[in-house]
Image 1 (tube, helix red, strand yellow):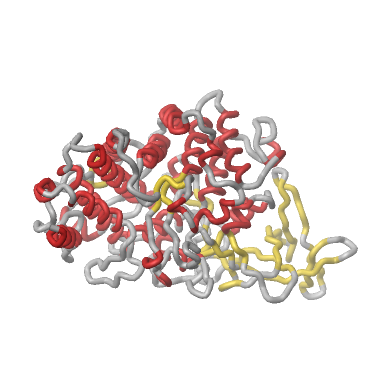
Image 2 (cartoon, helix red, strand yellow; image 1 turned 90 degrees about the vertical axis):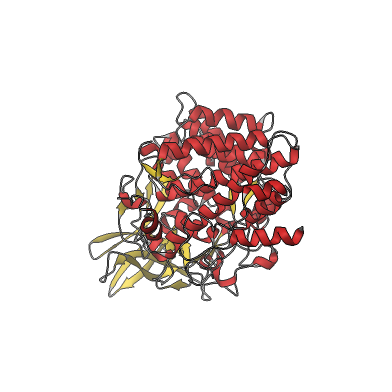
Length: 560
């Protein structure tokens, strides 16, 4: 029987060059699963594997061609959190500069793998009968969760935000293994189905079953946490508040988080942490080396180390030097020579990007200012206060340049090297991590944002923000109140929350969605290979194109 199951499972993973969001006719069917209910466990485990495994797509090489790597790059690299330090032939460059087209490998592979995962989930959902046992109900609930998160990630990447209109074109909605009809549902229809799936997942996982292992498996809490994100995106703020309150019951938000001290090692141990609701599990045997997510963020004996923490994000962290989220997870690569330097963006004659001007500076003991010489002119690094925070600048040739003053750092193509370690050091391997897709910190911030959008709940929103700030090592006036936020440059509690989401969830794939769904613009006027521009929330390029392979087969409509 085990041989038979392995045979069917292998068939499930087969795909031809023409397959898009469907499987070969000889894949394991719901009828076959019904004959052997144990197969549901194997198929479910296979569904989880498809989030992490590397695949060839239409004969293209498989290295780095995985769902989770593409997702983390497609969701995060178009944001203002990262600085790509040079051009590359990897499609991550196209995501970074919003230069996407329907034939790109990431655009096509992510779509294709998403529907493979959804098909596998539908196979189990159709075959497992409700009430047969508490554990079979749980397995079925896991697959409703899998189907929901796969649809959610598709609709957030390939369609406009829900807040831009329910009737906008969404993605192909698959709720059965019957793939005969391929049409694009509306954004509203997709979100309604995701909500229904998560409610069903919660119901099925509330019948006495238990999570089958570590945080690489879905749970009732994971489904609730994801539903809080869905409600937030749907602007159902009271539903967010009620759901998170129900999740917490009589516990405090802080009790769900790692402590300040243990948070340092959180991302190396996501699978066993109480903070993780769901992560894409990797084992020590599944390290991806140079094709890992970490490889672009870090070089520690291995890795390319070409994507750094951006200047605007570093500036935000540096408002509060005690913030451990900066010292724990952003690693400045210091120069072997001691001293200080300034950096500031300068125009690139070849395109609309900006490189950095780097200049060593010396401290004048009399004025207590750093300076450098430009010919016979002494250029001082001046300090001004912007919304209560220090900002450095110089006046050079009659122009004011806002600068960053730092210890002398190594650079790549003029970009100071700020490595990021959020995808590293599981089992001590700098290229290994089980990427967290959902954690309690986000859920708390979901409630904070919902409170911020609810009249009279500003204090509650800031209280949730302060839970995260306290865990980050901040205290006293470093915490927010309704009376001190204005002195820190904020006129809106929502903006406080969005900045806190940025600080807490940086590099985890939230920033782009957070800005655009709130109808805010993305300011990318900082040094990097991306164009020097501000991207408005209503710009059509914020959604990825539907893959050419899908359109050429099914004929569904392309995004504008």
